[in-house]
Image 1 (tube, rainbow, N blue to C red):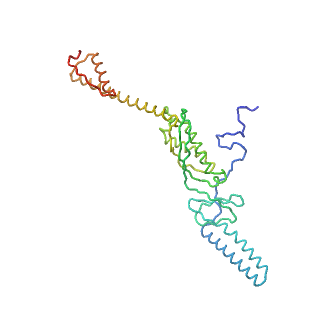
Image 2: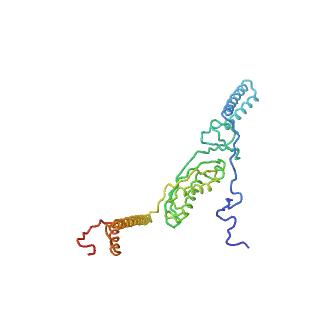
Image 3: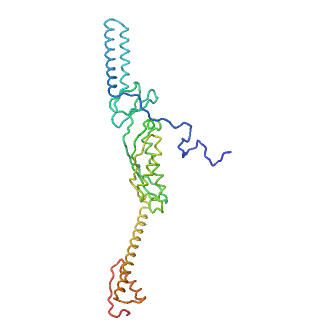
Length: 320
């Protein structure tokens, strides 16, 4: 009897091995390959053939009318009809663009050469850009590893590397990249605290470069099925959510005040220690433990106090 806690193979969910979960064979397994094509010289020959067939067809039709020969007229019409399909194999490709070639629905290959190109006639050609592109995700509100809501967004730089997968493996590769980028960003943001990370832990604010690298790696793993390569991903916006921003600001201010006080006390103790040591070393005054403690207390109050100290002149003896 199967374990009821184990999900069936066709249940919704991810498979760490990368195999498709669902109906068998749902994933389109196709890779890019070069399509049969010729350069500018071949394309010009094809165009010359096109004009030659038209001219020959017109001449044959004219001769058929003059000689009253239906055979020549039929041959001329046939040449004109054939000439209509010849230029369908000629296309122009700009730098940074490719053409995915299909013949009656069958994938023939991809043309990456630029300029005037000739390929198989009667084919459909879809333009796919391989230029570097970038976009900024929408600002997402997620809970970090400590449960604090934060607003985060990132910029993803990407490029199509496999035009066949981009065309046939997914419905819309641009939308696919955007959705998967937001999903990866949300997952990485939930794995790290915003700030105050423990030892050996990375925070979103303190290790921005490392977190950006994690985002880029996770996005790349998610969009590889679409033939897309992620060049870079960078956090563009990072802040606490408005509902807790004021409380977190007060916490940061309190931390800054504590750090400043620690610095002041450390400096004050060092100054008092130097002052007492010099007084005793030079023999300026000799103090017992009680007066020594009183002087230390007074000096610390003066050095650590926020308000300006008002001196009091003692006109009597040291012990009065």
